[in-house]
Image 1 (cartoon, helix red, strand yellow):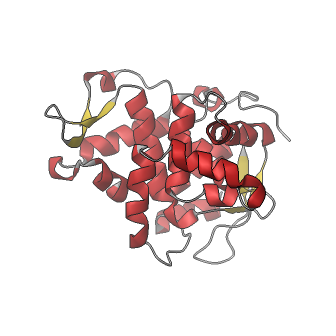
Image 2: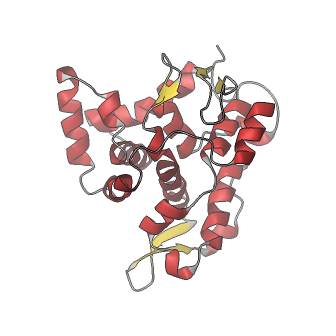
Length: 239
């Protein structure tokens, strides 16, 4: 099993830190079963992760000059994003969103890039996880974790919020997204984890993504975990 995200050669961005969206997928991964939990809501959650990361970097603001909700692109957005092509895609998606659709909640619902497959492909290129070829036209094959350290580091972000162990703003953003799609219910099951569930709920009660994401979930009852497009499916089968 490969140790650490910086191991190995290849392009420069493969040695850079993981994006928040990639960490989210590692938190969602059930390595024993080889599946992604809460997969039906994952595109919304990945949109939130990209938005959160660019907002934290000062590339996006989530309010207009008059204080009303609205995703606006800052002057700093023209600066280099540190060899993170996934974040470049988020920024491009924001630029292409029409003014009337730039309410943060609408962006979470409507953005389609980077796709789920793009994030998974990046993790595969970083040699953090891989997956079997799908056996039919609808589903991904079983996932296989290659870098346990990277997954543990991602889960530790949520754990610091759940235990009140001095979480960073990035930790809180990830935990807010995890809580927003109900993934914490999978991570902290049973009576033994009741205190952690309660602490997360209290700490994230007013977190923007923990509030916005549940509003989108009723729109996707019964949604299956599929490729984002026929082109994604073709690409995955060829890999």
